[in-house]
Length: 159
Image (cartoon, rainbow, N blue to C red; front, side, top):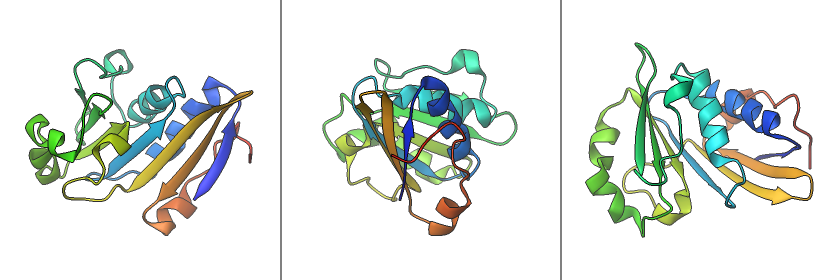
């Protein structure tokens, strides 16, 4: 697990780009954090870095799920689980299909609301919370090699 202090929004965006550099089709990204801690900002940077149209990237709070095309290489399924009550709520949204389609990356905000996931463990878990000046974040990769290969955000600091 790696931890950083992100003093401003640009550092959060940079972290999103660093995480994107390590993602592969079929990965699940589980994000948790306080309201307003930067979860959607992180996802927006991650998706944009991977080729999604920045004009299409937004919070799926009310629609629950957004999909972003990544050009010719796949798509991101962006899920907001805040209003879900458990992993069984993922199935009617298309979870089983997403797990069969190996060209997509599933990103879940408020992931603890749907733990344990029905069929696959996340490739990376991210926790974010407010601190006096900015936010702190922990990033835990299931694969230590990918975690070691992730570059640190240049504008982030060790907490």
